[in-house]
Length: 176
Image (cartoon, rainbow, N blue to C red; front, side):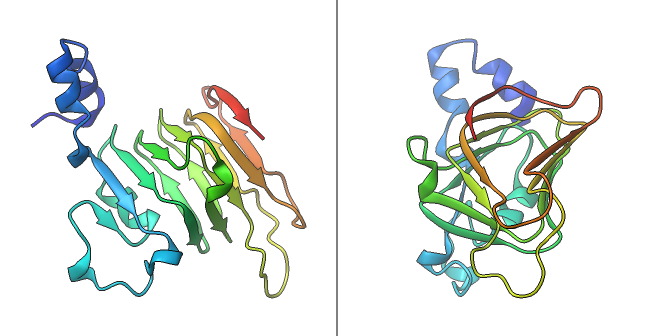
C-alpha cells in the first residue's frame, strides 16, 4: 500500500509498468452529475469509487487521487467545499462549459498542491433571495494549478477568487 502522494507519484517514475499501475482506474473517483440522477440514486447501486456528491468523493480521496466529473451539473450548497488534500479535479479537458459546479457557497482550497482542469464554477442561475457576498473560490495557504477553467460570479457581490497567505497561489493557464 502506497500513499498516492508522494510515494505513488515517486514510484511511477521508476519505469513504464509502475507508471501504468500508479495511474490505475481504482485510484480515480467518479462523481455522478444531477442529470444522471445523482441526488436520487440508491447507495447500493453506486459502483466502487462512484459518488453522488463532490464532498463525498473529497472525504474518501487520499492525497494525489483524481476526482473525475462527468458532463453535467453539480450543485454545492452553503457553506461549500473545503479541499485539504492535494487532489486532481478533472472535468471536460476540451470544453469546461460541459462540467458546471453551481456554488451557493465557496470552494476553499487549503491543500499544499492540486490540479483542476476543464471545470466551470458559477453561481446558480436560479437564485432565491439575496446574492452571496463571498467569492466563488478562496485559496487559503494552499497551491492550486488550473488549466482551462471558467469562473462566473455574474450578478453577485464579491470577487471570483481570493488568494490568502504568503505561499498561496499556483500556475493557471486558460483560466478565465
